[in-house]
Length: 305
Ligand SMILES: NC(=O)c1ccc[n+]([C@@H]2O[C@H](COP(=O)([O-])OP(=O)(O)OC[C@H]3O[C@@H](n4cnc5c(N)ncnc54)[C@H](OP(=O)(O)O)[C@@H]3O)[C@@H](O)[C@H]2O)c1
Image (cartoon, rainbow, N blue to C red; front, side, top):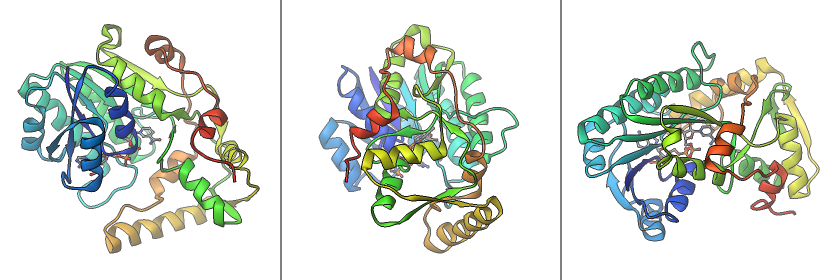
């Protein structure tokens, strides 16, 4: 099967390409910067075809989908920059993907959403992911939606970041009390679910949570990272009003002055105050996903001091 992957250069995308490389499927990735070292590296390593384009450019999407039977749509953002707003990168992008799929005769769509996505969600991230899901459900295509909790693995923006921070900083910042629960899932399991869904008839028209076996508070997630890396650090809890102020400052400085996404924003702060847990059983059973503790999973790529 010829598959177009959007977001193939990202953290999850790279794992999906690795999983696709173990199948007879042929992968093509939509990339904004085809000459970037990352795009070239992926092309060489996984023998993927490169299609230059942007999910906000419908013509480029149609060209990239030409000759494809399926799309794995991964593009998403956690922080806004330029025209990559939540509304554009989630909702508009997905509407564009659906429209291009219909036009070019693609029949299968495996879509990346997120746990916590629901009507009336508090964060704009989740609101726009919900609108994107609605576009997928109304598409008339053979669709599958995945909603992961926190995804961890080599090169992620969370465990790797905190492990790196713990190397030199005596404290780890926690926004608020850190008592909301997460259910971290390994990126390899997520990638396997996406790739297996392509040819699994029982996955069509269904939405699956993707979560690991444990429900851990944010504090426990940090404790596990510290335990795996063999460090002892103090967790510094920022009161929510102060955390909001910090987030606002970063939102002003990074996208506006530096042209880069803020490392932390108020939308993330809202999400971090609510539980992000689900039911791992249906996806685990249908896609034969591995069950691995967070600690064991981290140990595969975070080394002890
Ligand atoms: N990571 C998690 O814990 C987690 C949890 C739940 C759901 N998700 C969802 O999983 C998906 C992938 O997340 P990730 O962690 O892999 O993110 P990531 O590493 O930031 O990757 C995002 C990808 O989207 C691409 N992209 C962004 N804007 C684009 C545009 N306008 N046109 C074309 N490509 C564009 C990026 O391309 P460039 O290389 O050009 O920047 C990159 O390949 C997202 O939808 C996210 O919401 C992630």
